[in-house]
Length: 334
Image 1: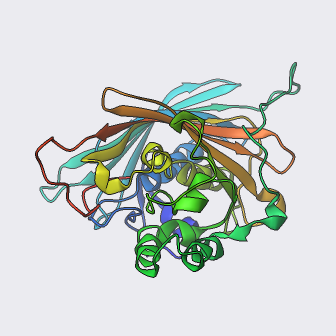
Image 2: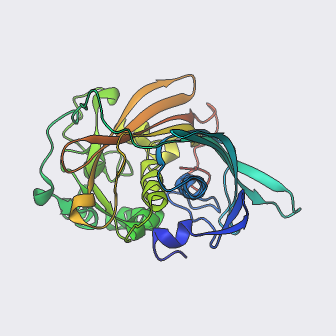
Image 3: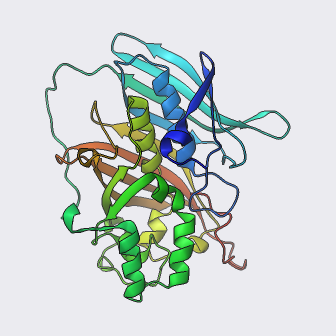
């Protein structure tokens, strides 16, 4: 297992355009041999950043999930230059794994766009979070917040133990302080679907989950910073609508991200272990229709500047009417 996110995204360069990871990806929110999608995204973004000059900064990564990655083999990354100018660079990135037959199977593809920092900005502004939240100094670490739910009787010790196993990868790499106003801080990321929350009077598209986060590992390069941001930005958006609608993962026959758009709004966005690197994330679902959902995560730095957002369209497929729901989340990919 990767001790830190730096181990997870570490790459060996095989040719000028191909890389492979030193360790396999890992699972999160899934009991099956299926890796968390943020692993592939983080690895691909790190490779894309390595392929451009040091003066370029990532400003968007737009792509699609093509299939689940397995946790028993490493990832391979191919980076193809599409554009190289004095100001912009674009890379086409494909992340894949070798099948038992020896043939590669694509897991993800995306376009990564870079820009040399502009000397000045004509306009500088950003939207604030959607509601007031408790200051970080008055929030609890995630583990303590979750234990508080057990103490209050909202969550059983067995359910908390299941949660901690499912989401241990995120806790291994990041420190989280969830806002007490957050839906997810009150219903254990949706796993306690019968829990009462302070946002129960709101429509599902008006509910929010939010909190503070920082990476535990010291991040040095731009690629490491962007990879860590991508890793955490991918989290939870596929099941966010269910968690905000008092539904659990077992209520869906399929729940998985289909595409993503990660956009960066600063030249030196940091998500490292220092206090000044801490980001505030707010998540909200926007649309649910035709078996898909569309949700967003927004990130602000300590100065109140919105520095990034992630949007995703995800599959959310119901069980067939007469099929018995399986009381397992082994087949659900996050």
